[in-house]
Image 1 (spheres, one colour):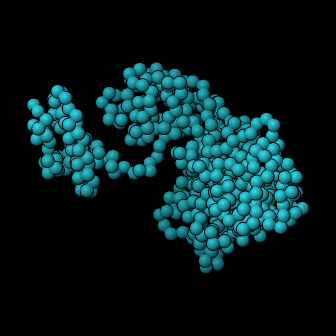
Image 2 (cartoon, helix red, strand yellow; image 1 turned 135 degrees about the vertical axis):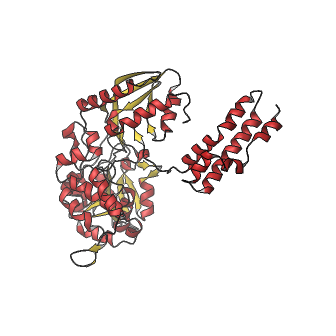
Image 3 (tube, rainbow, N blue to C red; image 1 turned 180 degrees about the vertical axis):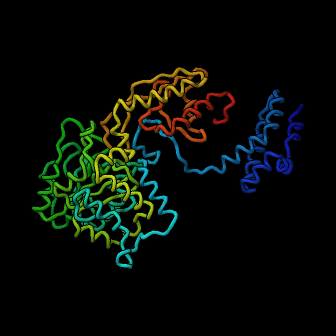
Length: 472
């Protein structure tokens, strides 16, 4: 049989539309999507025929399977692009996977607000227009000890708003060792430039002294800026100016001190076996006038840039036109308010906020989780060596870069496929599972997998180990 005859075997679009499998899809999906899927699969078939050698019988088999392939393509095309995935990497605040998970109460509140109108900017007591920031301002004051607060869409925006308000067309003095890159190739100097502040870096990469700040202060100075290097550490021959000393310098020269603390820790996590990360409360107690931090890192809430500090400065920020461009929406406010409520009781926060709960999870609980998942996986009939191994998890999200959390992981060594293929199949499964590959093995870190996700993980492994799997 020559290729010309094979091309004649390609079914027409109208023929495929009359196939029972395709008719079933037409009841659930738009016609335009179905036509696109048909044309896509027919184009694939033409290309296969072009490349075909003598194995023409395989093309007949392919043609027979066209309706099923088209149906699969239709379903795939209608899947949401943004979807829930299972994080089996062990990185808790995984930037690529959406950072922090919301507490159950926060999820419920977001759903409630989404389904109806809300008093977003309406004062129910006064019966007139209100402020969207009022829903979290009092809570932030109670938790941090700050006079006032405002929340914008992320921490980079928070820093930009602070500098635009307090140091536009003025100088912002910062240690050279604190000019960090904050992710996605965005850097503190670039954010400062956009705010209109003039960057003045003092000291050196590894050492900055009080005199460096003092000598740089002049009539053009707007703020002294301190950036907590939460995503890296400089070790060895180093020296920096502490908060107390910097606040003292600022007050002596009547210059406000601003700190970008980064991750927004509201609990001293060293009490739970982690390395000490400066808390928001510590900075406020030290006398920092304005402090900014993220809502979706170690705070464990939604993406937000939280600014707390002196009321006189916060009030100026609320009047800055930039505030409207970077303000938060009702869903963020709902999630943040519910998350902050949990911090009113530290024990409740530890047990209810997923990020904090995972970070402080003890080895005994991790052993219990790994044993349960191991039992479920080993009951499957799959060609792989499976065992529980000691590993380390990470906080992630640019926080606590030196921390390695002892954890338990399920190690899988496939026998009939390479690890890269297994990783790809799990990643492309209908419920994507993001894993870690280490020394030619695949790891499932149980710290970041919830027990409610075990069933999905087991079903995925059973599916992708089958030769007929179409997930690649």
